[in-house]
Amino acid sequence: MAEAKATVRTMDSSYHKLLDEDTRPVPESYRRDSPIEPGPTRITIDRYTSQEFFDQEVEKVWKRVWQVACHEDDLPGVGDYVPYDIAGMSFLVVRTGENEIKAYYNACLHRGRKLRENRGKAATELRCPFHAWTWNIDGSLRQVPCQWDYPGLEPEKESLPEVKVGRWGRFVFINPDPDCEPLEDFLGDLPSHFELLPYERRYKEAHVAKVIRCNWKVASEAFMESYHVIATHPQILLGGAHDVDTKYDVFGNYSRAIRCGALESQGLPEWDPLPADGKRRVRHPLNGWVYEATDDGLVRVTTPKGQTGLFTPNAEPVEGELGDVNPHLCDWVGGLQLPQSDFEKAMAERAAKDDRKNQTHPRVAYAQMQREVLRSVVPSVADKIADIEFSSVFFTLFPNFHPWGSFNRIVYRFRPNGRKVDECIMECMYLAPIPEDGEYTPASKIHWLGVDDDWTDAPELGMLAKVFNQDVRNLPYVQEGLHAMLLDEWIERP
Image (cartoon, rainbow, N blue to C red; front, side):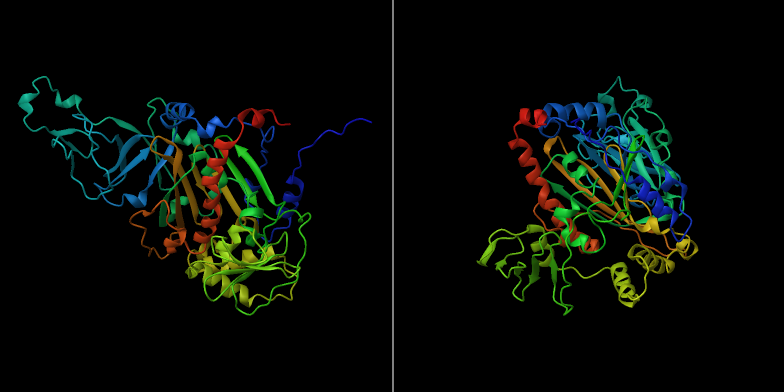
């Protein structure tokens, strides 16, 4: 009997059928297919654990690639500046004119001291705090104290070395490679995915950053796929996501994932609905275990067979028959609960008014809810938005920039924390539509969380903070697990 050949499952046909049934015209970009070829591949563990490989990344990636350094909202006025640190290097991005931004190596040409370690505003000069060598904000040398001690100094040759600067969607990119391709060529057709509400018409509503104890690629890759949703965010499956609904494509230097619900779920069991009595509880969609918050801050877990256990929000057993439960749902139900954002409140209120007796597909109903919320902010485009655009659409622009598509506010950036192979910086920015009345106040600074702080210490993120607790709980253990794996077995396992 001939052995059957394995085939790569694709959801393209079902996805395009969904587009044909959309209630609005679908942008052309959503009809492009560019599946990942040849499919999943194996790589060696040293890509995440080796200092030698990390050092190669510095030379071959971070010193040669276009990367997001900051946002124009960080530099509203002439003389405003933002340091950008990456893999042991530092650059200083400065608004030198109303429509001009430059970036310099962030080091004094005298003794190498960083010119600026924190962001600032309205500078008319860049004076080194060590010996007071001073440059104009356009990079030209302005003053050298005791210049007679430097008889060979040629001031016209002592300007601050610049790096290339490019701008897209009000994001400011830099590239240390003087021979790099233009940013427009590097981006390719990425802007074509944001035509109805381009990033040029969005402002930075929030910006939160945190050091994570894992390699930067471990963190970045965790936010490039929705495969982890089943195990890490099981409560989301109960809200419309399921196990076979993400389409992945790669276009040049960027990838796109669309979690669209195009296919029917395969194999998820059906459970009776939980009581609607206002208590905070959720059922795991795979095994049916119910997680319920108690009045004393703990979490009671009950199985379909009636077994129970009491746990801390960190999934530590307190009492009962059960001893091993899902830590992500314990955190979701227990611990600090943040108040809903204005957007989340509006969506909840609209959902409560929705007529559940009609036959509207939940995906279409959800899209209409979002349109109503956006109509108060960007009325000229709200009714033009296709249903598919309200799916979770997330992009990854090599190497570390994750702008979400459609009208989702999320934008991620992941970067090494200095030269530490086992640490990185995770950042989440909210990019909201600029209201058509022109009234908005952008975030003026980054909210830095401590390495051991809970994400709920950033209430500006709303319920996404609880989701991040689930995501980030995994990441240090991925890094530790990589160090624990047997390299040969990883490569050779069939």
